[in-house]
Figure 1: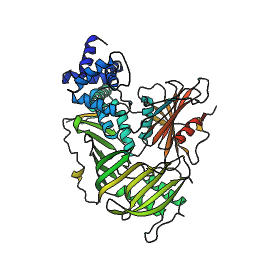
Figure 2: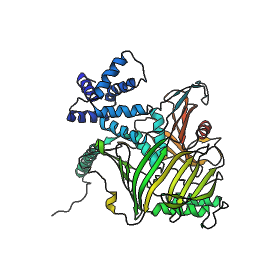
Figure 3: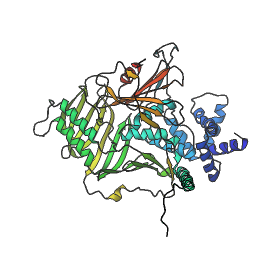
Figure 4: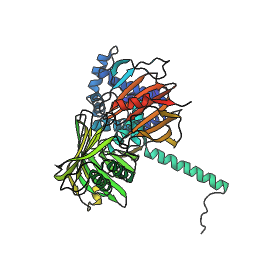
Length: 203
Length: 325
C-alpha cells in the first residue's frame, strides 16, 4: 500500500476525506482485502478506548480520539453501539457497510455472546475440555456458522441476525448491475462474431 | 414477521397432533390440540393483518409495526422497527428490502419463501418423534382477542418447550414463548394490538421513505452449495434427532468446502458443520439468544454444531460426530 492510499485511509477513518474520494475508497476497500487492514487498525482504536486492550500511550490516544468523536456523530454512534455490546465480528470493510452493520446491531443486538476457549491436546481424537477463562468474543468463523444455520431458518429474527452478520460483506448493487451489463454486452458481441447471436428482424 | 407457515410446517403440526391426540381439550371450546395446530397452519398462510408486535429477549424489548398480506400466494409485508433508527423492512415475495433511513441505504436480501415473526413457532418439515407432549392449557385474552393457550412440553432437557396462544376465531398465533429448562421464557413475542381483516390497502405496504437517492447494497457473492452424501454421522444423538439434509457449501473467500449436515427432531434443527481446522485445536462454545453452538476438533477436522437448543444438545451432537473409514 502506498503512502497516498495510507493517507487517504487515515483521512477516511478520521472523517476528513471528501465525500467523493470516500466513495472511491470504499469501493476499493470492497475489492482489495489488503487495503482493509489499515482500517482495521484504526478501528482497533475504538477497542482501546473501551479499555479492552492495554497499550502504551493508549490513555492519551483515547482522550484525543474521544474528543474528535464528539464532533463526529457517525463515528461516535458506531463506537457507542459497539461498546454497549460484546465485541463481535464486525469486520471493517467499507463505510456504509459498517454503518449498516452498526445500525442493525443497535436495533437487534446479538444477544449474549459468550465464548469459552478450551485447550486441546493436539493428539486428542476429540478435543478435551480444559476450561480456561470466559472470553466475550465470537470469532468471525463462528458468526458465519450461526449465519449459515440461520439461512435455512424460516425465522424472521434469525434472518435479521444473519443479515447483520453479513452486512459487512455487502456490495453496492449498481456496481454489480454494471458488471453484469458489461458481461452481457461482451457475450453478445462474441455471439454476434460467432454468428450464433439472436436473430433480429430486418425492416 | 409474521407470515406464513408453509404446507410442510402445517403437515408437521398435523403430525404433532397425531402423536398427541390424547391430549385434552377444554369442554365448550371445540378442538383437540391437533385441530388447533391444524387451524394455525392454515391461518398463518392466508391471514391478512396489521398490528404491533412486541418481542422480549435477553431482557430487551423491541417493538415492531407490522402489515402483512397474502395475495395469490405472494406474501407482501412491511415491518417498521419502532425503536432505534427506524429500520424498515419491505418484503415482496422472496425479495426483501431493508431500508435504513438514517443511513440513506437499502440492503437487498432474498429470503426463504416462508418466514415467521414468531421464531418460536414449531417449524419443521420432517417426521415428528415422541419427544414432546402438546396440550391445551387454558383460554386467555391476547391483544383483546380470546386465545387458546397451547403448551408443547419436551420430554427431556435436550430441547426447549413452547407456548402458543391461538386466536379462537381464526387460529392465528397471537403470542408465542420459547421456554427454557427452568420453565422461564427465553423469548417472548406477542401482538400488543392486531387487526385481522382482508381489506388492507396495498399502499399500507409501501415504504415510508422515498429511496430514490439512497444507496443500494446486496451480498456480492452467494455461498455455493450442493447436496452430497457424507461419510460423517453422529453416533450418539439425543433421541428423535435424525438427518434431514447433507450439503457441501463453499463460502466466499474459502478454499475448502464445508460439509453441512442438518439434524432435526420435528420441531427444531441443529446444523453440524465440518471443515478444516484453521484456528487451532481448541474446543469452544458460544451462544446467540436462545441458540447455542459447540465447536470441537475431531481428527483433522473442526466440527461445530449450532441450533436453537440447549447447550448440552449441540455439545453432545458435535462430540459424537465420527467419520466412517
